[in-house]
Image 1 (cartoon, rainbow, N blue to C red):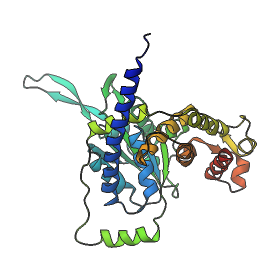
Image 2: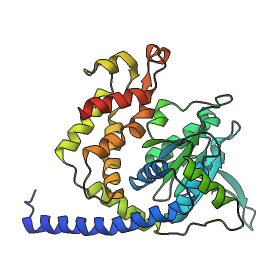
Image 3: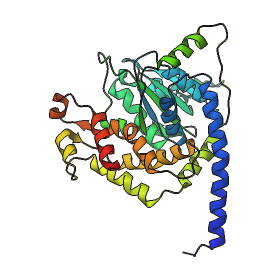
Length: 337
């Protein structure tokens, strides 16, 4: 293995800084365009965008009417992505998502099968109320979310690049739903909790969405530029202090790893994918906020959306009325010292 010339290393560093400064301008334009349509909900918009900028998928959890669908549609337009929406229902079949084979006949009467692509063949897929579909249909998303391709009748079909799934879930209504298995939850980079808007934002919603003219988003970048930003995020430097903080936080959330509160309250904790998610999204958050390297604050700010869906409380903790958020907040408080 050859030794890198110091001049080459400096040039690479300069190139990364120049690319980051260009990305900062693009991200600022994206934020400005989304804000024309989505009022308030800055944290929701930020976390959803961070998931996409990091190249991953996001699970949006909130009651109906909080603009989850509108946010996904807006992001598809602003980021220049080809997008589709699937409304999940109990009778939805895997072929309704992936596509199916149909029989064709040519002019000579010869018959052959042709694959008709389903709505999953999009760069941005909105899986609306994903927990309403049966486990069989939910599992049809698993391979695509992890491997970025599907297999039908033994034949592989690659999905468009980039490929992102933004799924929604109603946390209140549990009748006729199928909770997502842990393996599928782990494939979501972030869980984004969508809460009610504050008073000022709700006033803006009333005034801005009930008139004749309604704001329409425009495309700011395209899919090629998005992939360039995603690659840049993976090249951003991360200090040893930040890496150690990520490892410490993720490991402290696992029972049997030396944290007394976790041992008392947590049934199972996050795996290594949680640390990978924190590494990527911390870099993306730094860029989102105009910085060229992530800090400890980025790690702690993203602890909840990264860890919440990767942990489960034991019976004793649930009986005490605790939530996973409470446990994560305690772990972050301990980490901050």
